[in-house]
Image (cartoon, rainbow, N blue to C red; front, top):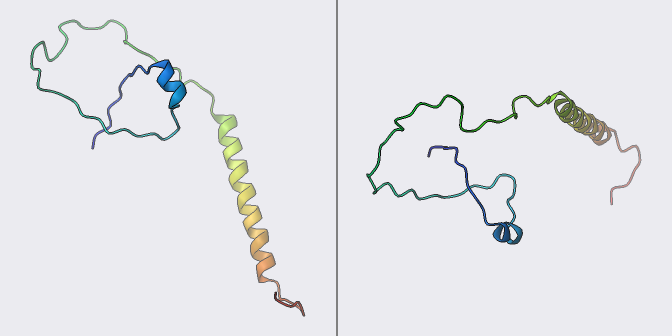
Length: 94
C-alpha cells in the first residue's frame, strides 16, 4: 500500500447525497496502460502548483484543549478507582 496525495473533484449533488466523513478511505484502481506522452514535464515550475497554510495555523489552543480533556478523563478515572477500592462498610450489594 502506498499513500499518494491527489486532488479530486466531486459532483455537488453527489456530495449532498453522500457527504464526506472524517477518516474515509478509498480503494482505487489506476489505469497505467496508456504509455503516450512524456513521463515527466519538460518545464520546471517557478512556483508551486498548490500551497497550504495548514502548517501556519497556531495549534496551541487545540493542543491545550486536548490536554485538558485527557487530564479530566484521568482525574475522573482516579476518582472512580478510589470509590471502587473503598470498603463496603456494611453496604449490601444488589
